[in-house]
Image (cartoon, rainbow over all chains, first blue to last red; front, side):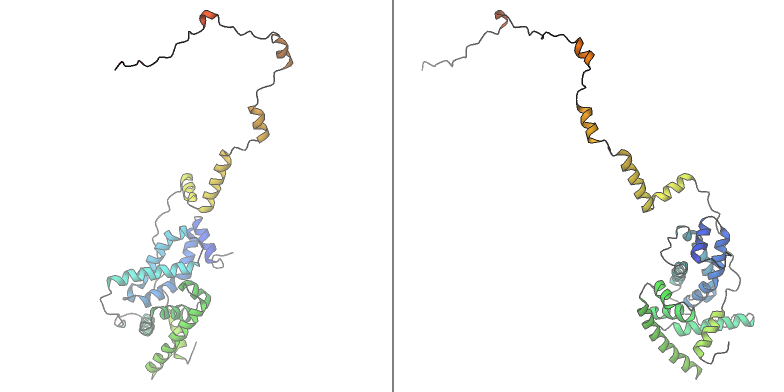
Amino acid sequence: MTDDECSDEDLVRQFRAGDDRAFGCIIRRHQDRVYRLAAVWLYDPQQAADVAQEVFLRAHKGLQSFRFRAAVFTWLYRTTRHVCNEHNRKRRHEPFDEDLLQIPGPTADLHRQQTVAKVRSLVRQLPERQRDALLLRQFEGLSVKDTAHIMGCREGTVKALLHKAMASLKSKLESIDE
Amino acid sequence: MNNSNPLDRLVDDYRQIKVPDELCIAVPEREPTSIWHGFFSALGKPAFASLLLAALILAVWPFDDPQQAALAQRPPVPSLSTLASLPLSRPTVATPSFSELPTPVAPKTPKRSIL
């Protein structure tokens, strides 16, 4: 079985047995997701790569005592939230930065920043629980079950939160496009 | 992917976002773990602690057979050769002579007052 076919849990077991390659595989598998979530949550999305780095640095230590009661991504998600909150706490008095488009860079970079800025501006006004449900289920494409597990609530609650969030998001998107 | 729905388009764009440069994590080197470290870290685990406790209880529990214990408390039965060597006469108890008996002491009567 190659590393890509292994489940997250198997990779964690290999890593704990001393295989650092397995940890590299965990990073490659989840780094984009952690980066995207950090870019949306942070006051300063430019720090998203730093946050992702910090999350995996903590994972290197934390996964040694991982108890397999939850999915590996649940652990990474909560750590990402925690690290983002730590970063945001220092800057909570600053206005939320939506002007990300002034940074010069390649077109792909600009497009990425525009997308992040658009998602941020849309989800920012939602209540926190709706925002989490929307990001995980709609944007990250996780199942309702996984989203409920990560958020620590029932699947019915996720569906209800998602329904409200989608309704307000669609109306906002329509008003933007008009 | 060409979606007409603005939300689907946004989701597609969002999912294209990747870390600009692959993360390079400078992880600290693992410390070599000793047998004692492993033992004490395992001690924290409930299953291991329960097993250890059970082993300790088994080690100190008195699992003696009650019949064996009762037999051990009885005095040993003398063998026939021991019995044969015993003297047949009863041991005599020395009776004390009359002079050795304690002299009785008369009880003291309280003195009467003349007044």
